Each structure stands twice: as C-alpha cells, then as structure tokens.
Amino acid sequence: MATNEARYDSVETLPVERAFVIHFRMTARRGRRFTGRVEHLASGAAADFRSLRGLLEFLTRLLEAPRDR
Image 1 (cartoon, rainbow, N blue to C red):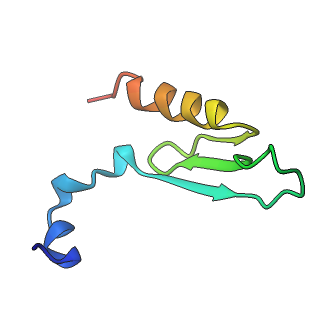
Image 2 (cartoon, rainbow, N blue to C red):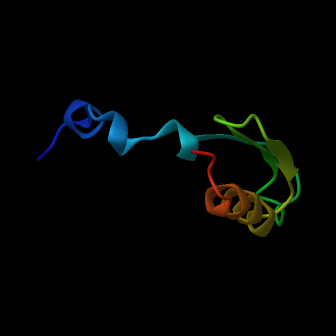
C-alpha cells in the first residue's frame, strides 16, 4: 500500500490550479450543514456558500473555466 508521502510526492498529482480551501461553519440549524466559505488558491476567487449545491457550483465554475496558458 502506498504511503501518504508517496502519493503526494509529485507536483503533477496536486496542481495548484485545482486547489481550494473550504471552511465549514457550525450552525445551530440541522438542515443547514453545508455553509461556509470557499477560496480558489490560484486565482484568489472566494465565495460564501449556504448549501452543498452552492459549494459545488463555485467549484465547477472555476474548474471548468478556461485556463490562461
């Protein structure tokens, strides 16, 4: 079995263009488990989200955006 170090040695494995920081907020309401803030590390684009759908829409929009070469 591969160790964590072996899995993450290659820069190609984890390109910064696809790296995000996701911060989940704690909420008192049971139905609102997916609230927080997400930031795309390469571009600095950030957004608050209030649902799983909102989080996924942000991720999809940035991952599908054309890249400058």
